[in-house]
Image (cartoon, rainbow, N blue to C red; front, side, top):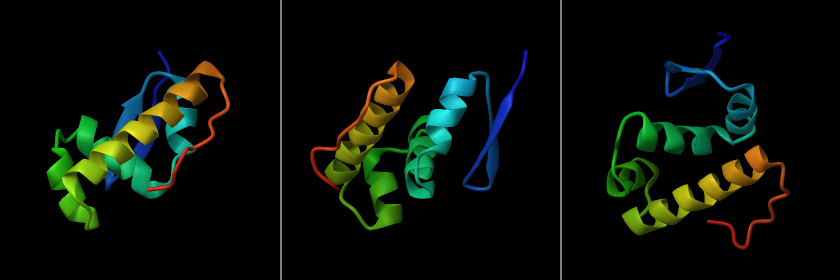
Length: 85
């Protein structure tokens, strides 16, 4: 099985899906870090928000926005953001 390395926050994550690798690689560095911190480091919205000078609820909305973009990318849909956070 082929692995696709993604380097985030000084760590390497091995992905098994080239589509997921492409979708995550298309995110900004900050967006990649937020997803990494949330899913791989299991930090809370509040903890991530503190790192970026944001409130926990703002971080939660940002995570949802990033996930919508990833889902759209993986499903082959175009994504148009409603607002910028």
